[in-house]
Length: 261
Ligand code: DAK
Image (cartoon, rainbow, N blue to C red):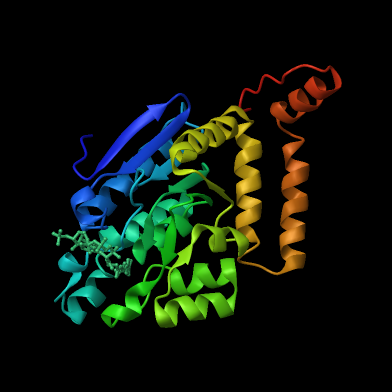
């Protein structure tokens, strides 16, 4: 498939998706979102790929949904079209992707851009990163998970302040409050994201899928249910050849040879 608004590459066992609309600060137009969704779905279906990195490059991650494209859309069209489907599809695709997706964020990640990064499994940020939900400044509010995912990640007080004022959070604050997992110099961001994704891709895929699924359940259920779910998955891991191989390799002081079985 050829893409107009993104670049798609494979680096070893890592799928790399780069948002590529520099003239509009990678604003998320319908076409771009459709392409991200298609690229992530293709990597999800590709056995040669074990993890995905989503980035906007060194300058900007994404300045939000494309306001010029959005403006003037009648309510009834948005409502009947579910805003439209291309917008919905990408969030569902990321939500359902079983392979880890890492966001590598430099520069602005605003509105839908912040929401896109938060829909990934974790965020590595450059020192230049700035996160925000400034929709209130254009008379709107977050519409793709900003009020929900941000609140779960950073707590009510910070999320309220950001959604009600549009204040941006810099990388240091984002790391302090748990929005991002690590902050890196911008020139190291992509290499480190690819390296982390590469290390994940080398691990046992069933174990990685199970770990990801278990962590995600933490957001959606009670502690007791989550602990029970984790326990059952932990037990299930013992049914895999990779688990036997991993433990034998540890005991034998050698590198494991996982077969994703
Ligand atoms: N949309 C369209 N174009 C944008 C844009 C955006 N969000 N952000 C920047 N651009 C364009 C600018 O119009 C400008 O284009 P030209 O005028 O040169 O043609 C170019 O990018 C450079 O921008 P600036 O000249 O403004 O650059 P500055 O460095 O001065 O400022 C800025 C950078 C990022 C602070 C500023 O551009 C800005 O405030 N941008 C808007 C940020 C924003 O309000 N974002 C939230 C948008 S609302 C949903 C899914 C998603 C969403 C909602 C629902 N569903 C599934 C239901 C998402 C909503 C949003 O994200």
